[in-house]
Length: 223
Image (cartoon, rainbow, N blue to C red; front, side, top):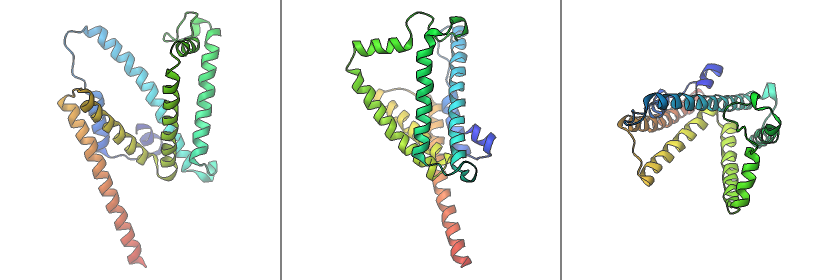
């Protein structure tokens, strides 16, 4: 959302944005744990999450810009974008796995293992010990591919705003089901965040529908 606003001047419902922020950022302190150590881990985790969100937001924002600029980049279809993105991701991931053992440890970040056992060899070893997990991996890949078809179709036919609304709603529904199914607990502020998100989504849908009806009536009157 932030990248769409800063780079392309897009606007999102304030209620949805505020609800997601309240739910994500509000975490009451947990008693009985070291404050300094927990704070360091929290900052480290938030920094990693921020990097992930930055690149994920850039990807989504640029993809939306490509779809909306056919006069500059040509006509791009959802399946074409999907194949290109996944192919590049596959190339970068395989390059990382294969080249990591040959890079000196002094040039590697702290989260990369410095032992002779690499992530690629560990993954192969795990599959050899647990071959049944291959079915779960294939199922996960199939589900992800089907989900991406709908994601890129939404980006192509509608916009990133609609996609963000769909994904936020899906994530919130998943969270609510997780709370109900696994008996997890949320704070009162987090529940308020959930309510704000769903209220914003519903209000956005109602207002969009009314705006569409008003435009159709204006066209009919102009005739």
